[in-house]
Amino acid sequence: MSVIATITTSLDGYVTGPDDGPEQGLGRGGERLHYWVMGGPWTYETEHDPTQQTGADKDYLDSLVATLGAGICGRGMYEAAGRWGGTNPFGGTLFVLTHRTEDAPDPETGFVFVDGFEEALERAREAAGDGDVVVGGGADTIRQALAAGVVDRLGLSTAPVVLGGGTRLFDGFTDDIDLRIAQVWTGEWATHVLYDVVR
Amino acid sequence: MSVIATITTSLDGYVTGPDDGPEQGLGRGGERLHYWVMGGPWTYETEHDPTQQTGADKDYLDSLVATLGAGICGRGMYEAAGRWGGTNPFGGTLFVLTHRTEDAPDPETGFVFVDGFEEALERAREAAGDGDVVVGGGADTIRQALAAGVVDRLGLSTAPVVLGGGTRLFDGFTDDIDLRIAQVWTGEWATHVLYDVVR
Image 1 (spheres, chains in turn red, purple):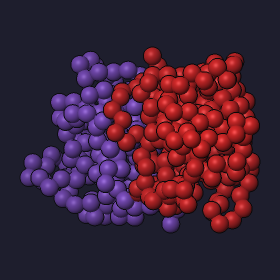
Image 2: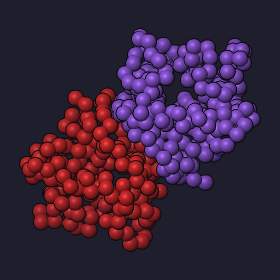
Image 3: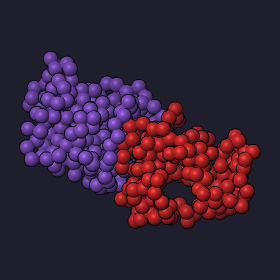
Image 4: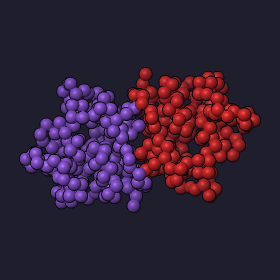
């Protein structure tokens, strides 16, 4: 069982474009970050099927899903994703970090609200069994996991775009971390590098 | 003939660690950025042969050198590299951007001092003939080239390290640039992605 942190950034290190929020989760121009997830260009206005990855982009995602036992993400990402329509699409339980747990959804949705990273990790490990715990975004959740020293592998997807602004993954992060390149997937819409964290 | 900008960053987007300068060109811990250039771990204190790349790291560098006609880099990089011992090791002429041109070296060294990016590009294009113009670091030189809209291809090498501080490649850069993944080299010490700049 491993803890795998995964996220997508632009070449300039942003996980969203400028002005991200509930109405436009990935910020201005930020949709391009997730072309690899959507199998190509998409917009918030048009229908988009979140299972249309192709080629190496799909292989990478499939490799994560194959060993996924449980997930952790931040409330901001959960809201920005429109709560994934009300049901966790990733398999296992997705623990959502939030200080506002009073409006927690029915656990049957696959989402569980948890107030604090440590508790989320403990419960996700328990729920994952032999599977991996995948820590998704947002940026602050990834930074918390890295700073806590609990991440075994880091999966960084880089989309071929310079955004020039937005939320930076490593904003304010001052730790020094050695990694080793474990595997690389070259997709059409992103390069995915899975790193082992050296300890 | 293409203009290719190339540089190496950490996962958190730094081209040097903290406290870079003439004595320690790549900053504290920044040597790890260039393990791929040196074929593995090296320090400023020990001898290191700059032609010891291996595997895909070597293939990537060879591909750049194969079509290189002339180069451009900043004065800071030139000094940080110890003026490459007094002779340009890259082939062609290396145009060094500097406002202090009074101590220019003998052109037979392969280095030519130029005061301004536009002039450097014009002269490098002329000197390159059918070859490519490779724009190396530092960060500000890459940003100038990208902002000028003259870059055809961007080669970004990512070393498997989080530095937590230093000089950020895209510091203060606010342009939005679309790219296309052209080729990826998976080395032991870095992942190299060559992008086409979409115009």
